[in-house]
Length: 95
Image (cartoon, rainbow, N blue to C red):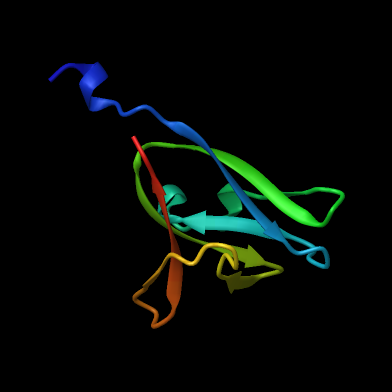
C-alpha cells in the first residue's frame, strides 16, 4: 500500500471550555495518551479556554483537567463509560 493511502488527512479541531474562574485548564485524551501536560489551553478575555489540535479521522475519548480536577465537556453530549466507572466525552473527526 502506498504511503498516501495509509496516511489519513489530519484536521484542525478546536477544543474550548468556559471556565472564567479557573487557574489552569488542560486537555487529556487518547490522542495524547491521557497526558494532560501535553495540551495546556490558553485563556481568552471572555473566560473561555481554548486550544486547537491536528487530529486524524477517528473517534477519540477526552476530558478536561480544570485546576487539577477531571471534568467532562459540558457542551458535548456524546459520552462513553470508562474503566474508572465514570464517563469520557467522545469526539469523531470525519474523513
